[in-house]
Image 1 (cartoon, rainbow, N blue to C red):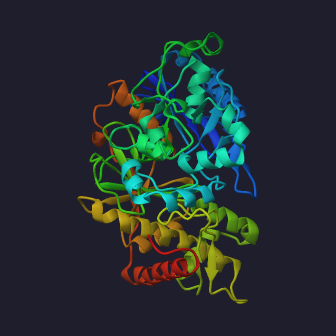
Image 2 (tube, rainbow, N blue to C red):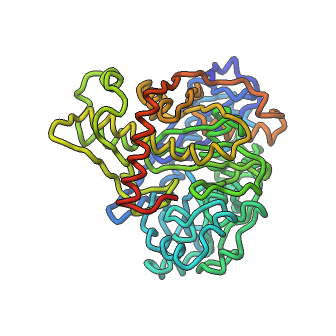
Length: 500
């Protein structure tokens, strides 16, 4: 993705919002999905993480930061702000909050990483046919999805649960504040674990087993549905946006696939930020799902098939912090000098629980083979290898259902600046790895959907390729990682659960 000056921008423009775990961002794109340089802005996101498994934030404080980001972009754009035709948004998914009859928040915004409903997920698994509902909703029973969370809320916070008139995500809360009404996109709804992925409606069969009625859930719309006519307060604050089309939020994972050029089964996107994911876009929503994978929605026509892991850049950040690795000169150079799978360590990096492929919320990380001779650098290398081998396990589940041998495109801040990790990933996958040259894949993906809705972009497959091959696998290195993958599986079976 190229950055362009305001003079080079082809109008009309799209204002893009990205509500992420670490920050909230806003920027302007032109009709070629290029970022207008110098107008990007961000605000840090304050997420509270507690030992009881809580992973939450204040939704009103978050929205105030969204408003500030919009202020900054429009003020910086000057007269160019009048060229904004639409506003699009992508958000972290599997988030939920409760509002009262007046549309005011009565709970915190609970994010995907919250594990307090782990026991309730186990309870659902024990009393219902999980595979039946996996095929219906595209999701497993897990603490990150709403079925288990609603049970947790009812059991652990019954008074708060009773006060909630509607359960929504942050994307709907944003629209509710701006327009007085809101709906969830099929994309965001599919990440709840409650959407029938074929019928594109809330799954009544599953709702029968939960303490929630469908009238407590938001209305559903496709990604091209638009709101217009801001409340007076916001129309006065942003006069340039009074007639702009506001599209519903879509899931950041779905957006990232489109933004990185992975809009068909011929390409698999591997994203690695705080967490990691392996995903491809398909059009056959009736496809039977492999047990360890999920299937979400991009929109009415396209689905997103793959798996997501809690482990990713968070493993590097954690190891760097506790081992004080900043003092080791160039980490990249030092990592590259270590031979593959040669530390004698096998790292199962489930430091924040597990999603794909085993979906064990209570799982924890394991390091096997540790001795007094190991160095901090050995531990870091083992951590990066452990993440890559877990990604390879998810790819193994995905590959058989794809019609062609795909290209693999990696993106995300965790891997973007690490050639050593790129090579580890290629060797673990035994597949060439391309690197997306789009620094903001999720934001660009949301923009592409908006440009589709406006009729400006006709076919995403016709867009230029913005990726380049950065790592080729080597058979001997792959053989060593193959052994490590089997060691990970053996440790998993013995200490955590049977394999998927």
